[in-house]
Structures are given as structure tokens and as C-alpha cells.
Figure 1 (cartoon, rainbow over the protein chains, first blue to last red):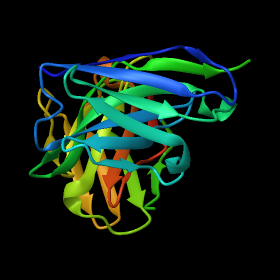
Figure 2: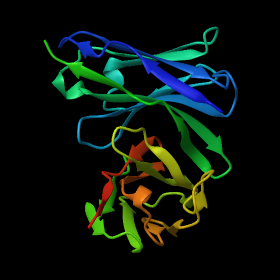
Figure 3: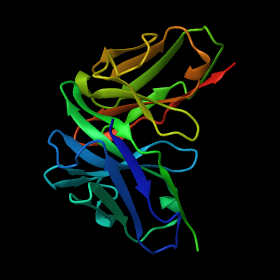
Length: 122
Length: 107
């Protein structure tokens, strides 16, 4: 059973960098056929995909956030990370990490972390 | 970017009733790339239906998905108390996007 667990500061000041880590257990992030994603959900709103890192190390970001996002991975620790720069109050959200499985019926987010709440405020 | 529209925004029903949720996409999507998730308050979304109509592991058969092109439907044949939640559709074209969600609430 794959498990994902987010960690990081719950409060970030405006204009600073938001940094989160997702620890993966029960599966290797270097295994083929999957990508490792960040998705966020502002309070009371819907889901927004942020980006992913592929098992090979390649990355792909939401065009609307691309200029501020970096996703990286530490294969030795089986974890991947999100950095979002120049944050504003609009970046306040619950941040989820999730696995995207490229199955026979298309890519699906099959495993999710429990989410971590991040508030941007001075 | 493919935009997803879900209707209704809120569905008020009683346990035992049938729920029909709609998801429309701004462009035709591969049928295989339309997915449904269920989210309960304070929880992460859970994979429900993928490939339009394939139920994920441990999802009961009262949940079914259908559709093609730009129109897709999630049906819950008889609502159980644990089914009251928010449901999101999601597509994967060049990148993943989610619909705004349909809240199924107890009438």
C-alpha cells in the first residue's frame, strides 16, 4: 500500500518561498509508470494541479504557476519536494501530494497524501 | 487548457435516492482520460471512477460512470449515508484539470 505524507511550515510570509516535502512509503518514486504530483485546494474551493516530477526526473508544471514552481526529488530518501516562490495570500491552500498512475485506461491520481494546510500571512 | 463544467453545483437528495452528476468538457477528451473523485470534509480526494466507467478498487457497484466526447455522467444508484460528499471530475489532456465539483448533500 503506497502512502504519501506531506510536511512543511504551515505559515509563510508574503513574498517568501513556500517549501513542502512529500515522503513516500510502500513504493519507490524511481519506479516507472508513475509521476509524483503536487495539487492544491484553496479554502472552500476546488482542486488545482501544480505540477509533477516523473520517475526519470523530468518535470512538468501548470503553465499558470510555472514561473514560480520547482519540483525536485531525492531518490535516496524516496521523497519529492515543492518550492513556490513569491507567495501571496492567493497561495493559501491545502497542499496535497499525489501519485499519478499511467494505467491502461489513462493517467489517474490513485494515491494521495492527507494534505497540509499552508497560510500566507504576515 | 480544457475547462470542465460540473452540474448541478449542489444536489440535495435523501438516502436511497438516485444521484446523477454531470461533467462537460470544453473540448472533446479521450474517453480513457476522464476520472471522478470523491472528497469528504477534511479528507483528501479519493479515486472513484477512471477510464470513464471503471470503478477503482473497493468502490461499490452503486457508483457508475458513462459518457463520451464532451459529456460525462457519474451515477450513484442508491445513495448511502457515506456517499454525501463533493465529487470532482478530472481530465488529462496536455495537463490535468479538475471541474469545480458537485456537492451531494442530505435533503
